[in-house]
Image (cartoon, rainbow, N blue to C red):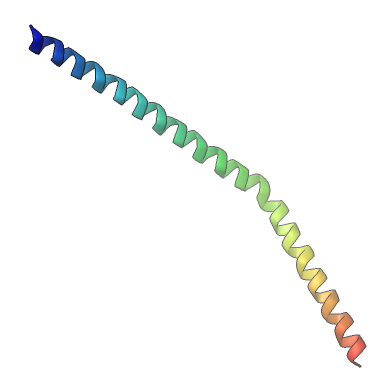
Length: 69
C-alpha cells in the first residue's frame, strides 16, 4: 500500500514539474518575441542617433580644421 502512495506522489511531482517547465518555456518564448519586437521598434531610433552622432563628429572636425588654418 505504501508503495502505491509513493508512486502516486512521484507521478504527481513529475506532473507538477512538467507543467512548470512547460510554463517557463512558454514564457521564455514570449519574452524572446517581445525582445525581437522591441528591437524592431528601436532600430530606426538607433539609426537616427548614429547619423546624428556622425553629423556632430563631422561638424566638430570641420570646426577644428577651420581654426587650425
